[in-house]
Image 1: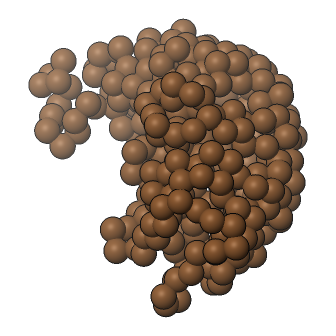
Image 2 (image 1 turned 180 degrees about the vertical axis):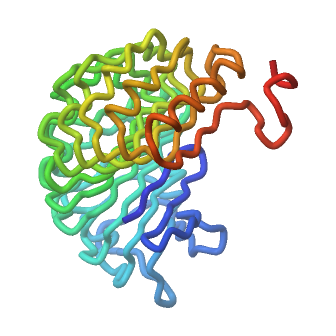
Length: 321
């Protein structure tokens, strides 16, 4: 399984626990200019990862058909005006696709036809940079025919209200990892994660207008192991919001405006917690330190808690406060 966090550099943690950049500088980059039907892209050599950039016009259904053996595909810095049905997955070996959209990208719609023939697709990363003046639309049916998709990551696409319709067509049984970053989320419906029974990693991060969570939001996520809510605007939590996360091992809730931490409820709702990051929240360092000691007593096992702004620089709360 590959768990990762989206920033402006995509990094993966592999099944063996080793971290690597998904797109390293030495990967082959294919540039083709204006695309023509009947002239598929070809590689000189055998590669499992390929980046394609500086392409213009229609992404024809046969364009990628000769990329034999390519498992990870990134399309970026492009001026694609249309994607023909089945074009993205015309090479059946592709397991991972990243599509990047920039300020000068064309306003296309990502529908189920764009992802036709993607039955083998396992990881889909969609990145939208800089507030596109001509927004790319993700149609409600976009992820309908992706039966093996276990990782979906969306960055920079405006989703003001995250509700059941937002994820309705995602295969809830196959999805294991979901990232929604810089999506301008303000409201989350309580039932949005119903039937996501196999989800193990959830990142809802860097949504600066998200200031609260509904109670029972995570009640059906009993298999969730990693939850990151960093970089939002969360405040006034009751901590009942985390009920149901009986398998959670890692919680990142730094860079919010949370005024208090409840050791009793955290220990009760997150009995297997191993790692907690609460840095850069309003309580003073000594208050956090007292909470940490109480939490460790109540959990009855070792837990790594990051609560100082720079634990490598400050040796004590007296120096930080």
